[in-house]
Image (cartoon, rainbow, N blue to C red; front, side):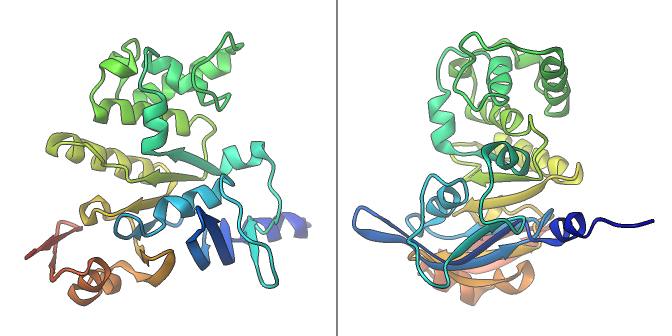
Length: 270
């Protein structure tokens, strides 16, 4: 059987490639010569203190921020320098605190998920197809939130609302879910439930790129950790090598001891 070389090349291309990406906002470099390659279905955590450039990295991926141009600068998705919005939707689903703030209103949980088909905040008399309704029903069941679908986002807890934003991000069945500080404002019970949900998503075949300042956000399925500070990627490697006393103490400028328990890592001694 003959094979299409173009198709094979596309399959083999990394999901995301940054080379020497620099972004300036407000007169300062929020990203400083970032270079990274992330494969499809790779589960990666980008760990760093507040202000280190983690959210700016996500905005560069989603093209909210554009890098400085120049020799040796490139940004490729699946090997392509340019990617239309429809292909982006099938590759990346985004969940962020900014997005949750935008949805903190009288929108039902079901409408939040449906709005993902249109990349909108709300539906605004959009035409909802039977296929969209079926996909929404499937996600409600998968995320275990059917009983909350008629409640408004404003009446939900942070953890409940975040599940609906994940449902919105998954409507196009993206290859990778991008999470920006995913456990912000979650209490211990919500954190426990949320981490279990992320593990379920990974087991279903969706990759995760997580940016966080919380060590305990890094679920066992994440195998690679990138440390970020001052707009740069400082260290990058296997989780067991990167999550060491020395490196994490240096990253956060605090003397800490790292312990591992049940596949999760915690910092103590500060």
